[in-house]
Image (tube, rainbow, N blue to C red; front, side, top):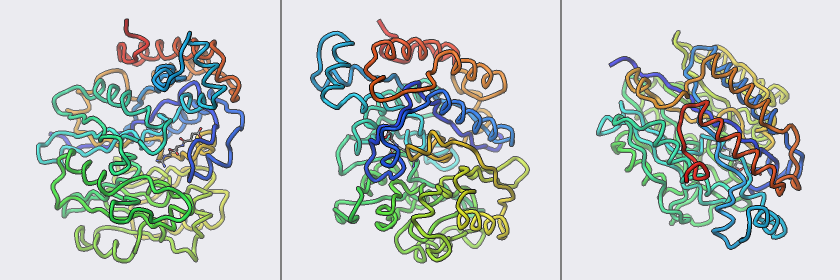
Length: 439
Ligand code: SUG
């Protein structure tokens, strides 16, 4: 068995990317509600980010978008008639935007993943996230499951269905999960926002992830108890706009970067981590004085991708909004100066995604695979230059460069998006994965 490497699976931005303000507590999404979207630019920006990651020698792959508008979901909630009538009726009832969101692009919320090196049965486990907090995101779970079952079909992988969709088991996937690893072994840190015992910890914004869900995910993922740690997100952090723990923290292997308000009682967390992982763990903590929490959320500096590169160093892929904030940039410089493997910061323009509250780290699902497991992947999903060129041409051919709320009811958009996704599944050699492709 060869040493595993991490592959970032990014969600290809769907052709209905727009700004509908669907996520309370996600300040960027709320702030940009109603703006005209540019799906083509959004898709190209995220592809450029993926190409940067691949050019650094890190693993990069793609997952396909979900079919939107989701006409079947509208039928399930009582809209009837022809597809055109269903779209019109849903628009009049104010329900259309919910079934048009391209939110599956934020694959950090698709599932939680545990690599075979850490699980009791030595398989790679995926637990699909139920995303039950928000209607538009809850629509993702069945399609995510089908896509993951398709790509990770080999026996080395185990894809679990999402947890039952109830507030008690509210699960937002890997956005609340960090795998740290030192010579003492791996530790999976699960951030959670509320539990049955702490029913309403926040004052302003909803806490999405429940402790009960995180525990269920860890059980399903076959992670032994000694490899897990469950820690509460700081309620003040959530109230400041950190709806997932990846808005105020990022970590991988022996490095953890976090804001003081990412987790409750940061000092106790760090001392527990040191007990479990030893002094090899390198932590850089930003205090409120150094970086005000509002500014950290606005700049999305913690929502960077932290990559372990083949030469043993690490690089951060930060949103360019981090450069525009003096305090955030100064903090990044401190990360670079500190005694840790992080030796470079690259910034990327992903503003179309950022306007909906999704930075670089939201756009990828980290999957650690051995070479053998990598070879067992189905479909043409690993990004190389040829695939990047094909995707770029595909976006140019099929994606609009302007999409406003009234356009969502256009029956032509439904036709266009189905045609595009049908072509994309062929381009990615995935076969027929969507309901609309099945007789
Ligand atoms: O769930 N935004 C997403 C952003 C997800 C970010 N993911 C991570 N932090 N990992 C959300 O709030 C907004 C869509 C809109 O308003 O049109 C949205 O769903």
